[in-house]
Amino acid sequence: MAVKIRLARKGRKKLAYYHIVVADSRSPRDGRYIEKIGNYNPVTNPATIELDFDKALGWLQKGALPTDTCRAILSYKGVLMKKHLLEGVRKGAFDEAEAERRFSEWISQNEAKIEAKKTGLEKSADEELSRKLKEEKKVSEARAARIAKKNAAAAAQESAEEAPAVEAEAEAPAADAPEAVSENQEPAAEEPAQ
Image (cartoon, rainbow, N blue to C red; front, side):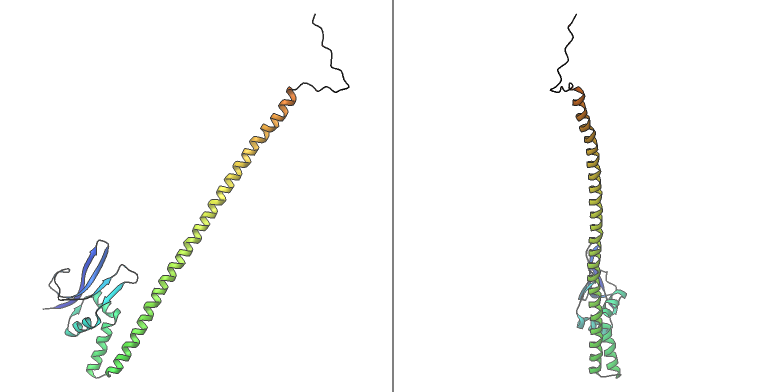
C-alpha cells in the first residue's frame, strides 16, 4: 500500500481550505484517510498553515510520500529540514546537538523571512491606502474648484443680467416723468381750446 501525504479539499466554491492528510494513494481525494496532520488555508495572505510537526516527521520517516504542494508546505514548516538533519545524525555525519543547533538556526532565519513578508504586506497596504486617499483628495479638490468656477460664472452672468435691467429701470422713469419745473419759472400757460 502506497501512503501519501496530500491535501483534502474542504470549504465552498472560491473559498477552499484544505486538510493535510495521510492517505492511501488509491483512495479518493476527499475520501477516506489514515490520519489528519494539519490544515492549510491559501485564501489568507500569507497562507495559514497549521501542522502537527511530530506526526508529519514520523510519517515521512515511515516512508510516506508527499505530493508537490504538501512537499512545499512541509519544506516551509521545516519538516523536511529536520528529516534531512536526522538522516545526517543516523549516518554519523554530526551529532544530535549539532543537528538541533542547525535546525534552530534555520527556524530563526525562516521566521525572520516570514515576519519581513508580513510587515512588508502591512506597509504596502498602508501605502496603498494613503495613495488612494491622496488621489481622492485631488479629485475632491478638482470637483470643488469646478463647482466654485461654475458658481462664479453663474453669479457673474446673473449680475450682468441684473445690471442692464437696473439701468433700464433708472432710465425709464426719467423719460416718462414730466419736466421738472423750477420755482422761478412759471408753468407754461395752456392754450385755450378754440
